Length: 374
Image (cartoon, rainbow, N blue to C red):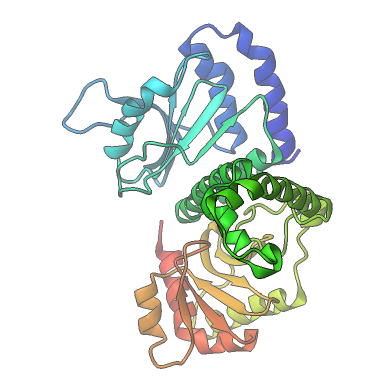
């Protein structure tokens, strides 16, 4: 089974079990550990999932998080568990203390086995935000929830990529909430903005408060009709210009199928040839295609060398290096470098894959950095 089938199976199991769970330990064993396992983490491996992990400033003896998800023996994600049925509202400060005490952790989750709240540190580095960037109820998952949870699976978990995705999700949620508020009760400024368009207001000489009140219900009705029309035309379906899509390639709906192109495969072979010519061992070079990008990796997707976006109006190379290092390596070229927040920290615009040859020094540096990391 794929992830979607696995998480929906767990959803049904939790629905059956929850009424028989009576305390925190049962919540952990019957509800939360199966969730962590569904994300692909080995709950029986203490090198990967550490229960009762110590996390505190100043040597507090009882400061232990329920589960720390670890990579290379360092925690990267925390899970704090409360008994099923308990409200999660009163426990934010406890989770925040654990998060703030552990700089390597960038994602923290609090759950009662039914509701999961995901936090990070957008507002201030290493200080957990007051509000979660994502929340879901395991017993009634939407397709959007499943798509979001896919980003936290072991096989595709990349702290930088997850935080970029989380930041976009946070702003998307905030903008969605704001738009819902505007559409539900159009404020004066919004009505006036629309009426200022001569093609709409026609012969209106002045837009007075009385005119705004007269047109407010008309604007509200028009917005509702426009949204219905957009949905009926299929605009709500995922488009090729979407800025964030699942990192996994096996769980897409039919309209989001992955088709690895000849150009991507040619780019893969070209990168391998460049590395081989410079004495690098290419036996562990792999690729992974996704709906968002084509990734060239060393041994696993988490150790990516570059990510490519090809076939659009512009072609991009995302190097796995800090932007300042990229600028230094390409200082003698005229190639355009952009700072970004998704899929990496920066990207290079190329006209075609032949220009990968101009990135020889950069490709070697990316390979050396990734292959020498633990």
